[in-house]
Length: 427
Image (cartoon, rainbow, N blue to C red):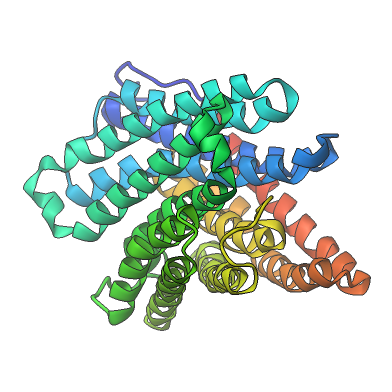
């Protein structure tokens, strides 16, 4: 698959003829970022077969959340910022460097710690921090235009999300470097790190993006709605407060933050339902529209379940939890929320903004829409069986859940890479 970034004027015989070289480069970077995010998800699945001892679940979690989600966001955050502001993007080498640093850094963190040495993983953490800086620059530098003021939700959510990630990633990097103050307080800082990265950075960025993207996917007008405010305010304030509550071992503060995050998740689902009810009627590519729209709405529902589970955990365990890990909550967070919203996003965005002519994009839509409804049903029914089956050790729920969810997830990944090859063959 040819993912080289072109710096030469387009040839009239090529599919993207007529676009400037920077526009071609931008489309290729978006395609590359989608491919790298899909690779992280595939690696997360494959890591289940690796003998990684006590870090077995840690690797899969970080490949999917720290890897796939962060690279996907680092790829599209600058794109959405520029698109909504109506301005010119930063030079493509900066965009490419940011994406590659996030990819290399997250891969080094996720695989370096169990397979090589924590110091190697710490170096990966530094690369991630540089990648965050480049992502922030390429997102906000073009927003200096006055047009950007029309979309304050994007500016505020993206800024706070990047701040959440910077603090969360810095805590993990200092831990990997063995900095004593962080090591000594890691029991409190580990869940704070998770709240900032997962419920803060990932979820806040996705919510801020879906405010504009989801109406576009379903063909509805973007309009102000009380649910929009609930989603944005709840996710802006909730995760940092919950993280602070864990960090200082103050349970009421953590509960208040978790409650606000739950309100934010419920607000996002409310907004999604309101938008879905106002959806347009498509004349063509109905299955392709369904893939993105239905997976997106299902992901929002799973996000509510995940936020409720995170809040319930504070009520059950308190805020001083040695050996804290996502554990069983990883199923709704990763499988239901993050991975599923990535499927919705790449299914819609790859044919919409990636390289290729109209014929290639039509073939991509057909590929991504293959067995759309069966995959959606298998994915979500599988998780509904898998989560309680694993939580309560009920084999007759767990096994059918795996047999439904795993093929649906692997099929979605296979279709993604097939769609990426379709675009590359037209290049």
